[in-house]
Length: 228
Ligand code: HEM
Image 1 (cartoon, helix red, strand yellow):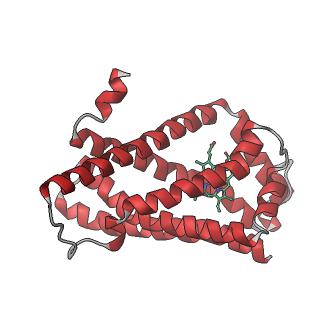
Image 2: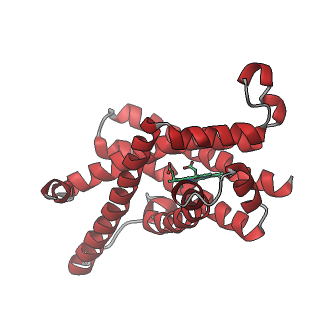
Image 3: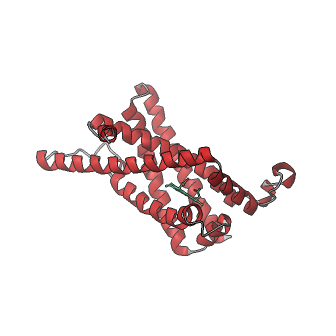
């Protein structure tokens, strides 16, 4: 308990914790995307001669999800992810409350001329993503992984993305994620101070490209399924 409390003790520690948990979640997003891209690849991508016992998108997606649940190293990584996400949210709340308190007491006037809209609204974007993740995990993770009420994950996901409201909620969540990442990736590297200033300028563009790519690829999955 003392160790956990220590993580939040100083503003430098809070920023570093935010950076590490955020970057770990961004890494999860890459792996998660690779698995879910199966949903929009044509059956011709999965020739039986190459993959052995799977011959189409449906079988491949279910084989992938079966592997996720039954391969124990993935289970450990998943628990690290849940803890990382929880720490990221708690840290964000503490940082926001501390900033509000400081602004209230000292009447600090912030200069917005050099910051972007999304860098000033990370809290709002994070809250939208938080609501999205709760809905998302309730729809898939809870039913498939926890309750075990659904065994054909492919059918569950495709059926879910045939509903208009779901697609709208996903697009809002994913666009917010894109903006959150556009500032978050750069900010995390800045907090950790791992690179000299010259490389940080390049990091700005790498972070932006990563954010656009993630938002685009995640965003087209529900749309393609909805319209096909
Ligand atoms: C439209 C694209 C997406 C699809 C089709 C999708 C699909 C799924 C499915 C089927 C599961 C349950 C099985 C599993 O654990 O992998 C899941 C879990 C999860 N998803 Fe997604 N997802 C998408 C986007 C996202 C996004 C954008 C985020 C983050 C903001 C996210 C975060 C998570 C998390 C945290 C879990 C629980 C992970 C675990 O237990 O290992 N997903 N997703």
